[in-house]
Length: 95
Image 1: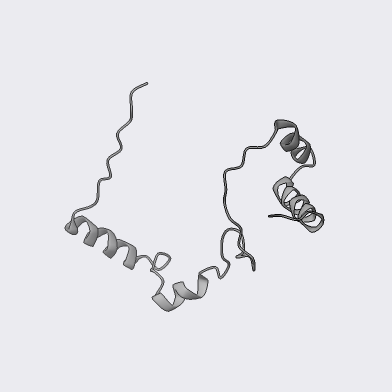
Image 2: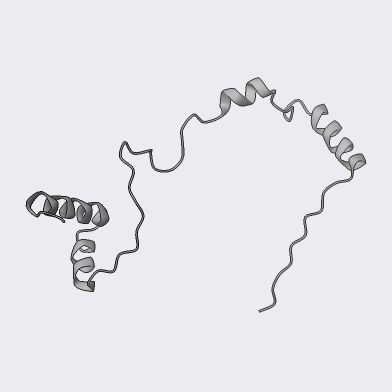
């Protein structure tokens, strides 16, 4: 399949002035002021909230049956695996 090449074509300054004038003449298309725009901006953050305790990303090789057993419990399997390892640390001395 041929690779598609997309090219963005921007208006010339003259074309941009014509477009802006037409938009400003339309009472339903008047742009918001900076103050109005700030008032409508969502105040929510996207993504996962910042945790009180950060975690470390590591590559870890585990037996397939161990991972399958935790995944069988559904969503949150990595958290359950982390909790299981923390419980193990309570009863085992690490050197």
